[in-house]
Image: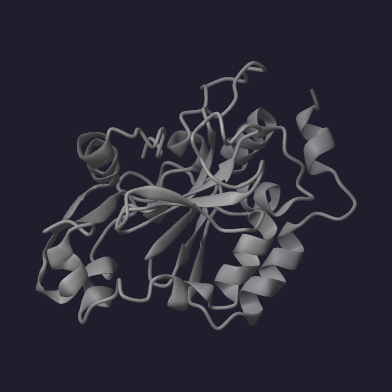
Length: 245
């Protein structure tokens, strides 16, 4: 086990380089303010160095709102101010980390690092993805797709995944899942809400004409629960933990 100062006091921390990458991107990204105490606690529980991009985000910001909040990448926000109640949860909350350090704690199947407003989940695979019923290798980013109700391997680790996002990769990734007026609907959400579709995204009706669906804001926890329930009901497959927020 590493003490928190060992994880933070490194010669080449990732956050300054990430800030430069964030300033150079054409993708709209809002960097939320960090709670230093929450960041230290989260980093200590993860046992991840500030040298990594994951550690840099946890230690350097309260989260990243990408493309007007379409994608929420979790960091260490405080519980007051613009990212407080009703705002973006932290990585620790989303992954149901213990309130105080527990050396025995590990993510159930992998670490949830981001959600999108559709109920999609980006997670870092754990050490044995096959045992957890997930594709890809250990440490690879995988995506739970609400339009297909399954996990997809993205072929990248956390750092490469983040660089892909900042290079505009989401534009093609979400092709067919955008609709006229969607930007305004997303902007009206708070950091704990997503959009529920009827007919649902995985239905033939939604695939045929997404703009004809009805949409309403719901708590993200409810949206994730609907995704998991749909998997179980339709094919009996449990996608596992999708996040606690």
